[in-house]
Amino acid sequence: MSAVMTQLRPDDLVGGYVVEGGEKFGRPESPDRLDGARAWFTEATVSVYDKHQGETYAASYQLDSEHSPCRITMTATHAPQAGTVVEGLIEKDGDVVRLVYSLPGHPPPTGFHTGAGQLMFVMRGLNK
Image (cartoon, rainbow, N blue to C red; front, side, top):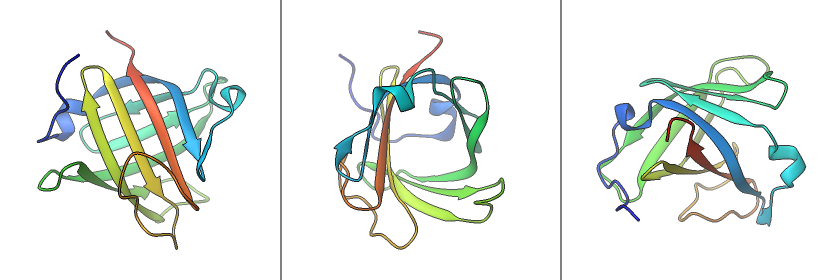
C-alpha cells in the first residue's frame, strides 16, 4: 500500500471517484444510500452525484496542507445550501480518498471517524 500524501495539493485530487463507504453521525452509512454515488474533483471544486446522476452536492474547496492530516474547507455553490461553509479533513492514499467534515454548528472532526453532525466518505478513483 502506498503512503498517505502529507502535502496534498488540489491537482492530486483531480478526477472521478466511486463512493465505497462512509459514516454519518458515528454510524456506518447505509450501502443503499451510497450505491452508485460518484464524486468529481477539479482543482477548485467537488461535485457529488447519486446513482441516477443527479447532483446532490457541489462546492468550491480550499486545502490547508500545513496540517496533518490535510484540512479542507468547502463552500457550497448550489441551492439550497449555497454559501454554507463546512470544515473537515481529507487524505489520499494511492487511489483512495477519505473525506470527513462537520455540518454547520458542529466542531470540526479531529480524525477519520464521525460524531454528532459529522459525515465521512471513502472514495476510490475511477481511473485506476
